[in-house]
Image (tube, rainbow, N blue to C red):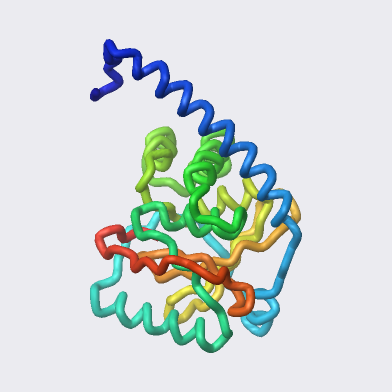
Amino acid sequence: MRNGAISNDGCSSSTSISSQQDVEDDKMIALVLSEEYAQLDGAVGRRLSSLAPVRHLPRINLHFPSISDSSLDYQRLLQRLNLYGLYEVKVSGDGNCQFRALSDQIYRSPEYHKHVRKEVVKQLKDNHVVYEAYVPMKFKHYYKKMAKSGEWGDHVTLQAAADKFAAKICLLTSFRDTCFIEIVPQHEVPARELWLSFWSEVHYNSLYELQDAPPLQQQQKPRRKHWLF
């Protein structure tokens, strides 16, 4: 079935009901888990207290590193993780990695990435005046593109996530001259911290202290073709 065509076997109706139930289940689970993990931990932040964060500027990336540069960037990121005693929960490199990493930080599971993406897109759509100046295209086209699964997140969606979830989002990066970036809510005091590693222009993962890392995590290496955050 393509292009929204309705089949004659009644499956369209049942699929719609099932989809609606999934949405309601996601909302309920997200609410419970968000309340459970909303307390500000700050453990990772204490390890990086000596670093001065760089001010975040929402933007869409238009430059991608070469293979050799990206390999050097990854080694630099690994060195920083080792230096500060931090652990990456590696999420799938399927184009949803930013939202999976945010989901892992908020709900302790990357599997709620669809819910996170939906909330971020709603934030963009409902507050277009705040974000549209950072987007070099028609804003409606931009947020509709971002609503699609597999569409790579960028620094604009990070700002929208910080605003939506009242969170300070902290990135330990692979940039040569920028180790630590903070994204803070624009209109309220953050209620939590979300820590991500950022292999620049390639991949995001979720970040923990070694002793706080989940015991069993499937390690998945990002596929290079999904280059954009």
